[in-house]
Length: 489
Image (tube, rainbow, N blue to C red; front, top):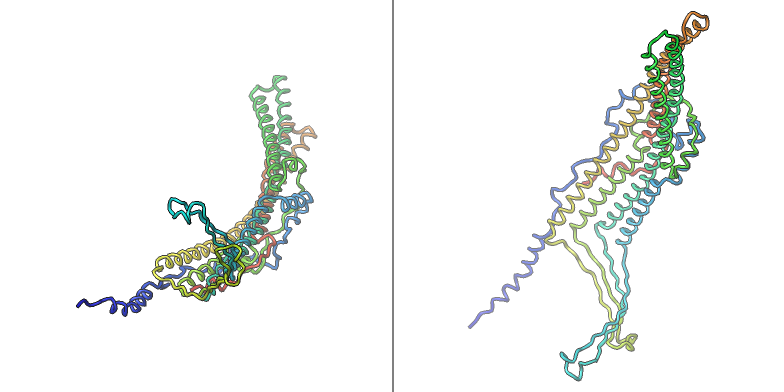
C-alpha cells in the first residue's frame, strides 16, 4: 500500500513559515551616526577677540546706511527687489514647500474613484459563429477605493517633518542670498569709490609729469640739459595717462557689475555718480560671541535645519524595520450591461486590514539606514564647517580692521610729512632759493602716499562690510532646537 507523505509536511509548514519570517526580519544592530554637532562655545576664540568684545549691537538689517550714501541705499533697494539670485532662492523655497506638502499628503488617508467601461471584439476565426464575428461583451464599473497606512512607528510623519525642515532651510537660504548680495554690492561700491580716487591721483600725477616735461623741454632748448631727461619726462606723462585711462575703464566695469547685481541693465550703472562714503565705524564685537553668532548667521542656521532633516530621515528609515498595518476598502458597482449598472444587485464591497512585515529585505533596509546615517554625518560636517567658517570670517574682518587702522594712521602720518616737505620747497621756490624741479619732485611721494591711502581706506571699508556680513548682517532666522539632532540614536 502506498503511503502519502504530504500530510506530515503540511503539519510542519506553519513552523517553517515562522522560522522564515524570523530569519528574514531585518535588524538595525550596529547602525548609527558617527558624529554629533559641535558646540561652538568649545572653540577657542578668547585671545583672537581679546579687547574687542563689548556691548556693541549686532548689525542692523540695513547696515550699509551707516555709510550715509543715499545712492548706495537706492542701489541696495533695487537689488533686493529685482536681483535674479533672490528670485532663484525664493523659487527653491516654493519647491521645498511643495515637497513638504506631498510628504504630508502621503501620510493621510487616500480615496480614489474610478469609472470604467471595457469591451472586447471576439473574432469569428477563434470563437464559434453564434458568438464570434462582430459580437461585443462589455463590463461597466464604478468604484471608490480607500487606503490608509496607520504609520504605527511614525515613519511617514518623520519623512514629512524632514521635508518641512528642508523647507525651513530653503527659507533661511533666501536670507543668506540677500546677505551675500548686499555684501557683494557693498564691496563693488567701495571699489568704485577707490577707482575714482585712483583716477584723481593719476590725473594729478599726469599734471606733475607734464610740468616736468615742460621744464625739460625748456632746458633742452636752452642747451642746459640733454634729451635723456626729456625722454624720461615723456615716459612719465604717458604712464600717468595710461593709469588714468585704466582707472576710468575700471569705473565703467564696476558700474556694469553693480547694475547686474541690482538686476538692472547697464544703463543703471551709467547713472551711478561718484560714491560719497562716510568713515568706517570702529571694529567692535557683541559680547555674546561665539554662541549667539550661530543664531545670526543664515548659512549656519540653514545648515542646522538640514541636520534636523537628516535626523528625521534616520527616524523614517528605522520605522521601515518594523511591522505596520494598512487599512483598505473598495466599494462600487459592476455589471455586464450598462443599463443595469445602478441596480442594487450590481453593488459590491471588499476591504480589511493588512499587516506588512519586512521579510528578506534586511540588506535593502540596512543599506537604506546606513545611507540615512551617512546623510546625517554629512549634514553635521557641513554644519560644523559653517560654524568654523563663520568664526574665521569674523576673525579675518576684525583683524583686517585692526591692522588697516594702524596702516592708515602711519600712512597718513607719512603723507603729512611728505606734504610739509613739499610745502617747504614750494616756499623756498617762491623766495627764489629753490627750483621748480625740486617742488615737482617733492610732489611725487605725496601722490604715491595719496594712492596708498585710497587703497587702504577702500580695504578698511571692505573690512567693515565684511564684519557686518560675518556677524549676520542683521538677519535673525528662526533656528531649530540644538538638542534633538545630538540625541539621535
